[in-house]
Length: 425
Image 1 (cartoon, rainbow, N blue to C red):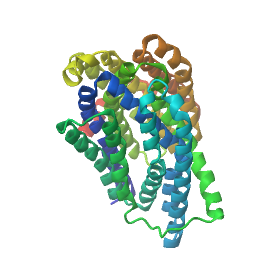
Image 2: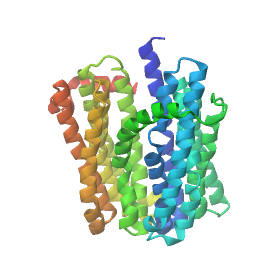
Image 3: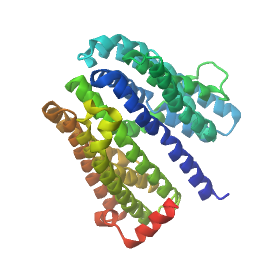
Image 4: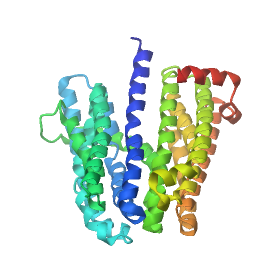
């Protein structure tokens, strides 16, 4: 098989496995909503959100660095050294993350004082969670993609199964739901330690001084990108009532599916450009993502008003408008992700960080007043403004870097329909 074909197969596997979590999240959302109600669902989101944020903040790029150094290893001894370094750095980062969460939990959960002890309990597992991420990165670098894909599917499937068991036993509470949501990821992650070339011990200082600078550079880009996607939920924990947080959590779970599908399409399209550095492929990918995103937004906007009460219950009717706004926001978000990936392919990875920061600023400025004014709807509007700002800056960056005009990326062509039909087949 050619290198391009191998790359495309790898990207397809990554795209399909990345669908597992949002699809299962969408499947479990109605169950959690009906069992816990708006208040309980909001409390669950308040506990899980800071944990997810802590995983990205305190990973410090160890997973990406593990992938890089494992892939570049020239011998089995090199691999063992790099894996040992990655696991040690991730574990230390997890201990630091746990200490910080213990301190900030009472402040972060000021509206949810009864859940502080639960967040502290789950935060104690951060060293394991971050070490799991480092192990996943090492396996990817070594080409053990089948194991990684298995783990990515196993975690959400276990979560769904456990939640169904708890519902059948009439034992689904905020406590058991949080344990299921967070614990199944830890449990399935233990699979990643199987077959890892690691014999124990701690790395030498010289290994850490090589590993850490690279991991911190990759962390800055991934952190800014994650904050664009998740900062809204973290801020809402501080700003709105539990029901409003629950409505927004439902909206995000629904909106993540089209966003992930757009992301998968973006990966498949850009796999074709691997090594080609062809700017016309970036522009075409943008146009196709715009077409698909607009179609998904229209379908979501039409279906949500009757589907949300039917699936989640009448109490969650306020989530409808949030879902519709976030469906529209998925269009500029998808386009920005395509351009960012294109800039990386052109050898300009630093420019995607600028785009992500440009998207983050409007969210920081607009979200607090909008959320205090109109709750979750305000957060959805702030997300839309954030993604639109990020897209505007990304289009300028692409124009400067490759001479591609914004209209070339945004206005569909007749040939795009044929390309899209071919991809669907």
